[in-house]
Length: 227
Image 1 (cartoon, rainbow, N blue to C red):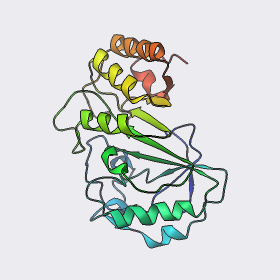
Image 2: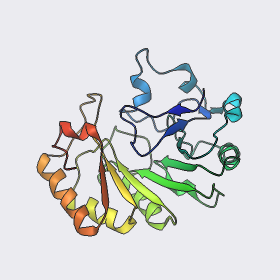
Image 3: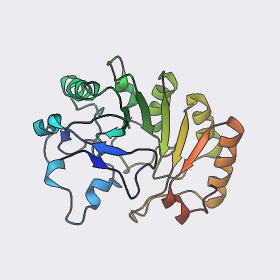
């Protein structure tokens, strides 16, 4: 598929998205938006993990902020390292863009060589272990990996799940991300969600810690947006 301009519930600070990785994401999160397409999960994201060769012919040009593998998790434990390297090499062919790499397994960011203009993100929906939500590494493991990560980084809490304010806020303070994205479930998955009071208390803590908060419009279902 061609380079896609982002819209809808995507990050407003990203201009484009592209994916080279086909097959079903091994994390199988129950809220995965890839399952929410009008006619179900596209064939491209079914079956075993694989690289789609034609995607390596896409010209990224310059001056863009590109979310790489927005429909899959390039850093899940099941993705072979050579596949990751091929994707990174394609990105490095177009060095005048900013590349966004987001995962639920940030331990695998590791020692790989990334484009110079890269920003690293992790999804941490809660500080709690909530069975049946996702097969990704537990939240604390993701937090510890991002705490150690150098360079530009951000955290996404979406969909926000019920959490403990002091613990989750302290995690974010330890990670010291450039900013934090906060959003809610958009597809009525009946997830365990926090109260308005918890969200407001959490956002106040972020202000105390000097962490920039970027709220997504879907958060308005749970609490009025503060921006």
